[in-house]
Length: 293
Ligand code: GLU
Ligand code: ZN
Image (cartoon, rainbow, N blue to C red; front, side, top):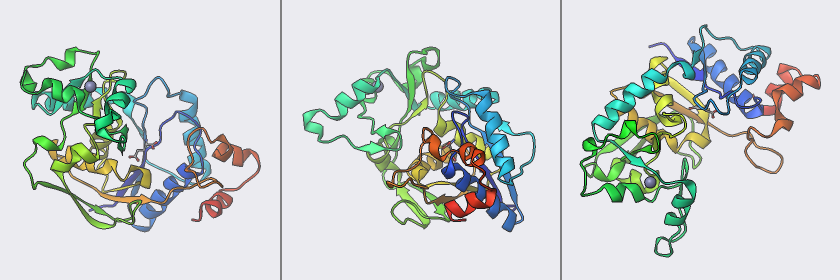
């Protein structure tokens, strides 16, 4: 089996040191394993993606000394694939419509009897408002959901799964709490620990979780190299792989590059943009040294 990994940035802002670390680490691993490094442009969020940021990604990565085969996969060209998988999940009763907005969710999750709202990979864990509304009325497959663009499609996690069923993946790096090696988790716990995440967003029809799983499979990725901030989301990805009949790659979650105050770098941290380092005369070797590679 050939080692194949990828770097999957969103063209919504400049690449910063954290992106450079992730991309170079993945590229280095592919080189040492005599494997392949692929690039994927994660631009499902068309309201925030910009062509000039996509061009800047290519330019920065080339400058860092990385190369990848063409053509590059771009998510905006794969909407039909995402829709087909969503149709399949709707038809199997694994999605349900949700009309809650952020405010509704925050209010329901912090109702006095609920205690402090718990957070999952997508923010506050969904308190299940629309799931409960649905219970005992319609069978999921009776609801003509895909026609209703006013509703998001939420994943019916865990609690409808038989107890004791487990998901599993191999962590070749480390999770935020030192998790490593074979990671197993109970499917029936996901409702409380991850929540019914949105797989079909109102504004874009799909979601990060769904597209990343379909794209990794399409690109034949054997090793997903990415930041520890996505460790929790991996459980959702593994469950989706099983449901959609896709292979589960190995995962290598890496440390996050932080600013001087210990905060993880975000897109808005333009001070750490590769663009800026380049303008100031830094070399790719300087970037490597700065991120500890
Ligand atoms: N597009 C995601 C990001 O910019 C990365 C997704 C992944 O590596 O799974 O953080
Ligand atoms: Zn809802």
